[in-house]
Image (cartoon, rainbow, N blue to C red; front, top):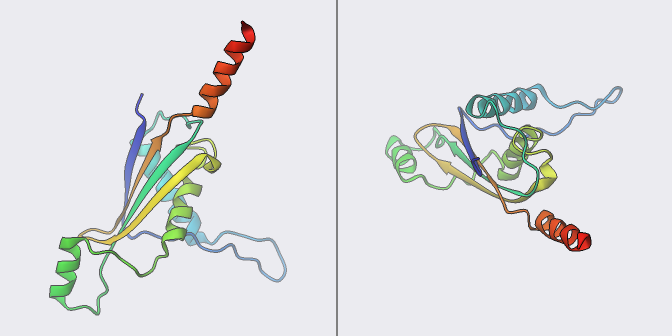
Length: 154
């Protein structure tokens, strides 16, 4: 059984949009957010069609690769892509992480409360994409509980 899941969502990374609340009516998630969450789910399901959600703690690494601004010179754009310069612009890193964790909820792991750590990197690169890696961590709490049960049985 693999303890690392890794997949890629080609195209521009889209951040999680804020929930909208009209003056009269119910709160809703913007269509753009729902559509990108579906793309993440589809990419994961294509890469791991038989995966069952993990229980226990997980770590996640998210790499958002963005295109350099068009206003930059061609030489500067090429250098930024080749050297994978950090991308300090939009989309915001926290909203990129949130859309990934919400999309994988119930697919890669049972609940996003299981995420013990996240590393999010935003770089310029040759192809816009979102690369996600989810790693299963040792579940020391479950191991401890199991040891306690065994001691109680004696």
